[in-house]
Length: 452
Image (tube, rainbow, N blue to C red):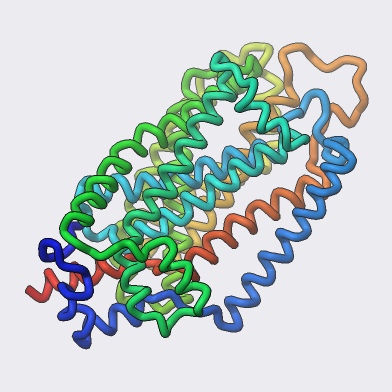
C-alpha cells in the first residue's frame, strides 16, 4: 500500500492530520505494542519453563548421545524430523500471505500480514534449530557448509532454508520501518531499552519520498523472490523423502502434497493467531468478523485441495497393493497407526470443511477451534509421514531386538519437541510485544484515504 508522503518531507511533517487527529490518535493508541499484563506474564513464564525443560533434555542428549532417544537403526528419523517438516510447513503461508496480498493489492489482508510474517520468522528459526538437534553433534551442521555436496538434497534444503530465513526477516523488517518511526515518536509508551533498540534498527528512517520509493521497490522484489523460494523449500523437503527408496515415500506426488499441506497448516496458524491477538489486545475494530469469514473460505479451499492430494497419495498404491507397501498401508488404515491416521484426516481436513461450509462456522470462535484442529491434525500428519514408513523397510526385519520394531519417542524427545514448539510461540509473543501486531502506518493511510 502506497504511503501518503509528500516528496522529500519526513513523516512527522507530512502526517500531522493522521497522528494528531482524534481518529489518528485512537488508531495509534490501539495498535502500539502493549506491556504484558498478569495473564501475559503467566503465559511467558509457562513457555520459558517448557523451553528450559527442553534445554535440559537437549543437554542430556549432548552428554550421552542420541542413545537417550528411542531412534534406532530403522527409525533414524523420528519426532525431530516430523517437527522439522511441521515448522517448515507452518512458515510457508506467512511469507506467501504477505507476498501475494501485497503484490495483488488485497487491502482486506493488511491487518493480517504482520501476524503472518511473525509466524514465518518464528517457524523457520526453529525448523533450523530442530535439524541441529536431530544431527546429534551440533558441529555437524557446520560440516554441512564446509563439506557439503551439491548432489545431496540435504544441501539443497540447507541452501533454500537459509535463503528463506533471510528473505522472511527482511520481509518482516522493511514494512516495519514506518511503524518504528511512529514508535520513536511515542517514546513514553516504551521502556528506555526498547527505545534504544528502535533507534538502532530504524532511526535512519525519515519517511522521505526517496526512502519510500526504495523501500517499496525492495518489498516488491522480496515479495516476488520469496514465492519461488517458498515453493522450493517445500519441494526440496519433499524430495528428501521421495529420493529415499522406502514404501510410502516412493511417490512423484510428494512435492505438491507437501506444498498443499503447508498452505493449509499455515492458514490455520494465522487464524489461531488472529483470534488470540484480537482477544488479548482488543483488536475487534481491526481484525473483524469479515476477516475471519474470508480466511474461513480460504481454509475450506485449502482443506479440499489437501484432501485431494491425500486421496491421490494413498489411492494408487492401495489399488495396486504391491507386496512391499502392503504392511505400510495396512498399518496406516487398520493397524497400530490407524487411530492417529484417522484422527489427522478427520480433525485436520474433513471436519474443518464441514464446519466452514456454513457461515456460522466462519465466525471468530468456531474459526479459532477449526484453526487449532488444523494445526494439531497437521502435526500428527507429519508424524505419520515419517514413522510408519521407516518401520516398514523393503527388506523385512529379521533377527533384530524387539525395540527396533516399534518407535515411541523418549521423554527427552518429547521435551525437546515441546520446547521447540514453546520456543516458536515465545518468539511470536516477544515480537508481538516489541512491534505492532497490525501495521500502524498502513492503517493510518487507509483511514486517511477513506476520510478523503
